[in-house]
Structures are given as C-alpha cells and as structure tokens.
Image 1: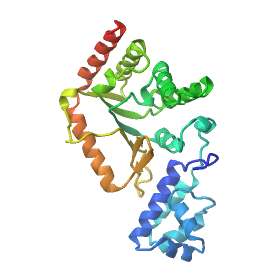
Image 2 (image 1 turned 180 degrees about the vertical axis):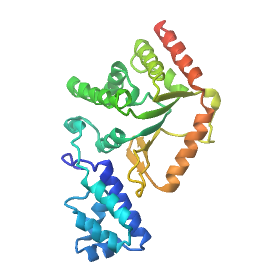
Image 3 (image 1 turned 45 degrees about the vertical axis):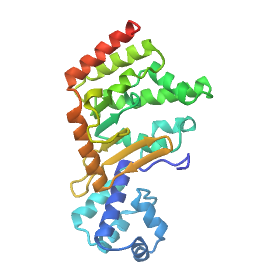
Image 4 (image 1 turned 135 degrees about the vertical axis):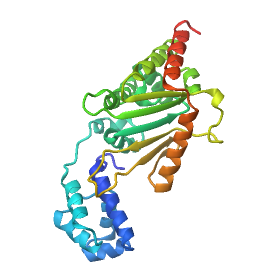
Length: 296
C-alpha cells in the first residue's frame, strides 16, 4: 500500500464486501457489472475492496437494481457510504513501521472483540515500555534511538483501545507458557511485564490465560500467532466481516473466508479449553514476576 494511502474504514470494507457477495449471488462477473454500470472493471474491483472513491447514492441504487437487492439492503448500503472517512493517528508514524502494518492498525482500532494467541512474545497491546523497547532494539539493531522511541510510542497508543472509558475493546489473550520464560531485556524487565499482565487481567474487558507446557499440542500440531478480529454490528441487513490476522517473518496475511474463520474459531476454542483458568493464570504471572524480581 502506498504510504500516502489511507486504508478503507470499516464501513467501506463492509460495503465492499457486501457488493462482492451480492454480485456473486447474482452469478455476475466484475466485468459484467462494470459494463452495466459504465465504468471500468478496475473500478468495480476497487469498490469491492472498500475503495469507494466518488461513489454516489444513485450508483448504489443502480447497483441494487442490477444485483436484485431489496430496498432495505440498498438503504443500509447508502448508510455505510455516507459515514465519513477518518484520519488515523498512526499515519505520522508510517516512516518507521514495516510494510502495510497500517492496514492491521485500522482493523484493530475498529474491532469490537479481539481473540489473540501468542506462543512467542507478549503482543504489542500488552507490552510495557521497557519490554517494547528491548524487543525493538533486537528487531531493529541499526535504527536510531528516535525511530525506536517512535515505534514504542505506537504500541503505547494502540493500548488505549483496552483502557479507554468509552466502549473499550474486549480482548482474550492466550499466551503459551514459553512466553513467560523467554527473557526479553532483563529479569527486571520481565518482572515488570508479567506484573503488568496480571494487573491488566483484572479489567472486566480483558481475559488473559496461559497455555501450560503440560498441555502439549492441543490440536495435534504447533500453532503460530494469530488474532481473530470481530467488528461492531453493521446494519442488520449487512454482515460484519470477521478477519483473521497472521503475522510472520515474510509478511502479514489476512483471512476472511467462511471456512478459514470457522477453522480458527475452532482452534481458538480448543486452545482455550487446554489453557489454565483466569485465576490460575493470574497467579502464575504474579509468582513468576516475583521470581524475576529475585533474579531467578
């Protein structure tokens, strides 16, 4: 994604996804709809990815006629179209972030529920300043202190979605026990990080569970880190898109197919059943924090 592009907002992604589903249900190709609407196939493709450009109310009315949509669906789509785009705070940090991470940030900021599994490190939403800084120095050893400081600031600002007073996001975080024993920075850094996790786990919108070593491989194979993002309900005529985010060394991956979402939800439920309960997990975090304080 070009650096000066703003990722489509949630309403526009919902609108685009509904247009695609409606076209497929009508057994029409993008080229056929484009011809009927008298615009290019590339324009139709952009619309279905949430890049609505100068789409007008009357365009949606005509699309509704072509796709044989009901009046309520068309009205709902016009409602999504009229929601204004937002300028995202993280755009000023894009010069120090990797690839298209702004796409994930836009999803995370608008999510209603996050279901996170992390077998390697504490995820950014839960990192302390010291832990985040230590990780950043490892990952970007040649960067100047100012760039490292700005990336840490991004992590801290992201965390506001958890602690904000108005409609904080609901988060379930499952950490493999290995995360608690992987020293990042120093024992002192780990002590503060685990204490921070224990404190966050007392918030009513936060659930933190530990998958112990003794659980083995709950689904029979190793599972990498993932985030399941659910979004606020759209108008009842339109389905809200659930997105699976997978981050790895070679780039980010986004999954949204019905089968893919169903599979990851099933995996998440299996891992959750194998994890320690909330109280036991919190006690483990506090105990290990004390051990790190003593220098282990």
